[in-house]
Length: 368
Image 1 (cartoon, rainbow, N blue to C red):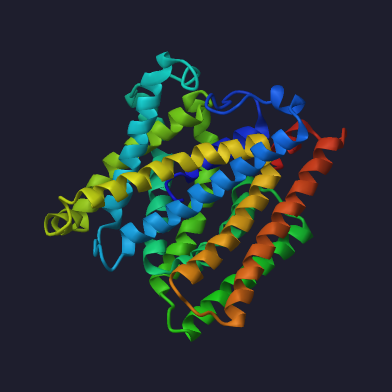
Image 2: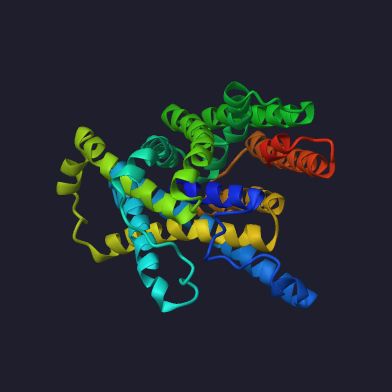
């Protein structure tokens, strides 16, 4: 879930903003889909939503296995993230090289490494590294069931940073939704402590991940013009930069020594799981774009909230955990607050777009 946040954020912003940067891998808007029979359109939407849920949930469980499996015993979270970033960059380059093969690759931009562009993307890459590393470290130290609550403050940081950096105010109803999210977060932390499963390290990295996700969205918007609004070109440069920056961090934390003594380093099944995790991480950006195209950005956020609920329930069942009523209440508060915030912002954006007296700059600043 972590490494593909850049792609998801970019696709979501382009879907909201329209114009340049339309994803060549995704179906064109306003095509034959509107003329298709209702049942066919409903089936397409159902398939796309199921694909998004499957890819996103599978990616989280795969990363949990790679980061904290008792049978694997690999204490090298940066290496796992580095490998997935390298695989993402390789897949972007491979798709670009296959552009001559015709659909669906024909519209992809040609990718080549330009040092000047790479330097321009570097500030975003630093935030990106903080985001993916803190996401994975949070997942390493907390259970999958609590993962959604542990990094649930992204919406709160979005509101805070919008005010501090962009001087944008937030409506009372949206602030109340943020209050519900904060309440659910603290109740979840309290209940994890009561059950003896609380990891303050995981909580710290969860809060840091929430902050970095918000910063990543801001820096993505600033850096996109450098790559001509191309989400895939930005993904390529960002992951290449991340691979370079990860090397000194892995040396500093002694992960190469850990890998040298890792008993499964030559195991095909280990590398198979690593590759599968990287492929799912890359694919989540594509299926997220599909879901937005076939539904809407608002529906995508609602689907993501429902997916988080399903992911929590599946994790509790899979790991055979027993949770208290208040623990489940904390999850419902986080999910309910997130849904309410999404709904309020969606209504506000619709109201702004329908009001002819609102300035164009205010229209562009309003988002879900």
